[in-house]
Structures are given as C-alpha cells and as structure tokens.
Image (cartoon, rainbow, N blue to C red; front, side):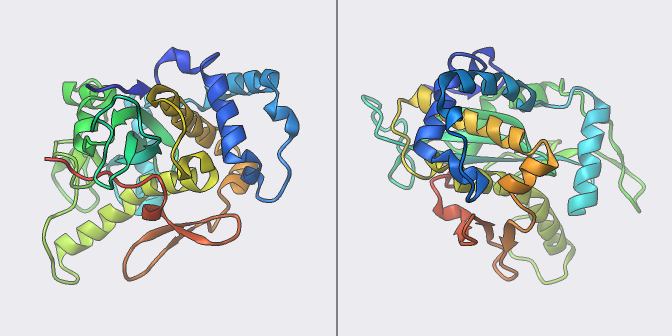
Length: 306
C-alpha cells in the first residue's frame, strides 16, 4: 500500500504542522541552526510556533506556473552549472523510522532499517520545488516518483513546460529536461547518465560529468537537511504519518531560511559544500567544519528494487 503526503495538501499548514515544528525544536536542538548562537526560548512556546507556521506559507515549495517561470530556472542552471535546458534535479532519500507496528516488511529497506522516502525536485539554487514523503522504504525512487502528482502531470503534458528550442551552437530543437539518476526511467523530459565506461574527454564522459554536476543540487539540499535538522540523523520516534509531517516541516524550514541573504548565510554559509576532485563524492560542512559524507547520514540513497 502506498501512503504519501504531498506538500500541496492544505492541512500541513495549521494545527497539524505546529506539533511537527515543535518536534523539530525539541529533538533536533534547533538552536544549532544559528551555529553557536542561542535560539530564542520563546520559539518553544506553542503560540510562537503557530505564528511561525503562518510565516512558512510563503516558503511552501511551488512548481512554476507558466513557461516564463520554468525558463528562469533553466537560465539559472545554465549560468550556475553550465547545463542548458535543465528545469530541476529529481532524487529520493530515505528518512529512518523506529520500527512501525504491524507493518511487516513494507518499510524495510535495503540497509536493513525501516524508512519512508522523501522524493524531491530541486532548483539550481538548492531550493525545493516539489516534495513528496511517506512512501515505504522498500520502494525504489522510480516507483515513488510514479505515484506523485508531479509525475502524473509531467506524463500528461500539463506542466506548462517551455517549448523545445535550439541549444547554443546547434540547429535542431531539443526539449527542456529534468535530470535524474538510473533509478528513473528515461522520458522526453527526463535525462540521465550514459551507462557504461567511457574514455577520458569523450563526448559521453563529458556529458555525464556535466549532468552529474547539474544533478548535484538535490544532493546539496538533502545534505543541508540532514546536517542542520538533526531529527533526520537518527530514527524518528513517531508513527509514519507524523514522521512524514516532521520531514515536510524541515523542507518548509529549508526554503524559508533560504529566502533572504542573511538567513541563508547562517543556515548554509558560502563554502558549505565541498567535493572530492577525484571521486566526486559530495560533502556538507557542518557548524564545526567537520565534513559529513551525505551517504553516511540517515538521509541515505534508496536502492532500486526489482
């Protein structure tokens, strides 16, 4: 059975979001957000959390509504990551749970833990455009994606994506795409790496490098979440639906804290991200400058299930 909670559902704003925010405050020691500064005690007051939840409405992940908004994202990917015609990066991550009661193997993943999956679309600046969380950990990225409203609208052709256009230096029109890994099926608007091994400086190897660099933004976003919101770095001691609300609240807070330059520089300062030049393994630098390998956090990569 497939249960997910989408960020587009209204009940996430209001009474059900408030306990989730409180859970983050209590379990994640959210004062670490300010990297050394004391987080105001008044945030722990329920009334203050209610006011905060109202402010979070403006940080709700939103898909572009028209071609012009999609084109702005594509321009950002081309300028920042040197990858034209890209509209976002898709990926999924496991959020570890305490063993759910009477769930059998539904939430049991390939790492022998229980989890729900966060499936996300991220823009060129590490902001969430879409998130769906709650699918059982045994299901692959591709399976999770197939059940999302994002996938259904993409396949139905109702996302209002930009019309095909010519790449720089070319003569034929090509579609705008989302970048993903091998867990996702190829589609007119979903692009992934060439399989196999390719010679240095070959066109396919260069393409794979460029696509990996563009796809990195979703890894960055997951890395920030797992480093800052420590409730995600250990099993969440809640039932599946409530755990999903906590994860989604972290996504809201992520977008909210990245809205202004001041909060963004505190939440994820410039230079927070590092990359091993040879292995291309991505890291997030936390408040003590200790590099956290993203694959070693509780937000671990789902494995394809056949």
